[in-house]
Image (cartoon, rainbow, N blue to C red; front, side, top):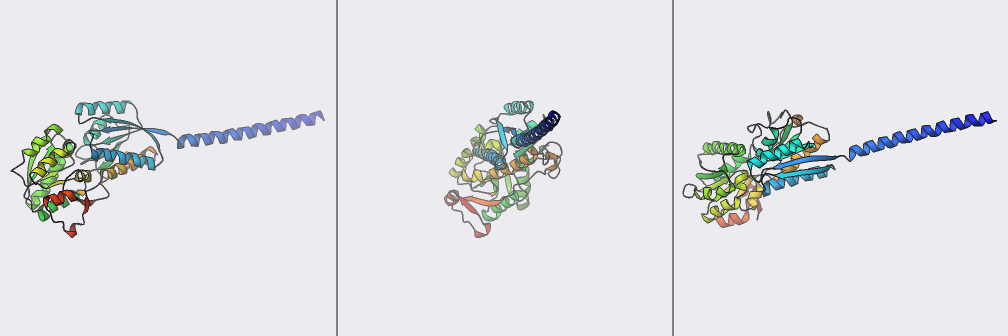
Length: 330
């Protein structure tokens, strides 16, 4: 009888141990899954300057991350349009070993791209990613960098067509920072398109936002309009351009909607929030391990439309024709 009880006890103990082991494995598996699902990523953010367009792009980026349900901590740093500080920020983010870098502008993207081939980089607010040497091509970025650009093949031709055909303009002033690769590329593209339809471009170059008003005033008497591209230095001081344009009754076309809301006449373009959101969707795929930057083509803005500022239209006495299918902001 004792022998039978001993055998029963041994079997019972083995069964208990087996159940405990299974429970432990299941708990470990559950904890492992939970750990993966709740991993907190660190995203370094570098932005060249503080202004509404770039801020909106960053907001869109964060919203895409939030919508995907990822847990993220951000290391946000702003260079305030200081090239030396921009380089320092790039060094800081790369050395800190973040999971991904979000570069909001061409100078920001160039600075971090030069320092790492390992950390994934997603950019936005970049005009020409190939000319800026961020990627090999739009379709096949290569390396560790991809993102969204702030121009579209249709944007400049449509804007130029409106200035020529609807406004009857001849001489167009452009204020920009020639030191920004982003800006030089855009100005050259605008000049090429305007030359096709007989419009003349008069350039006024600046190096800081403090020079914007004086540069704009230097155009008076030489131009009958102004066209402001997505130049960070100029957009940061856009009210200076608007004041001069309004004083001299010059129609001022811009390249994105935030500048229309601030007083520009109009733009054929997009919301910076949208291209930031689209960049955020790319970042989600990279952080989840679903894609690498090299596999994600650089993306143009997806939601293009023609927008006019109602107050500016009224102040200039411009007739708005139905065929332009424009939307108004005030």
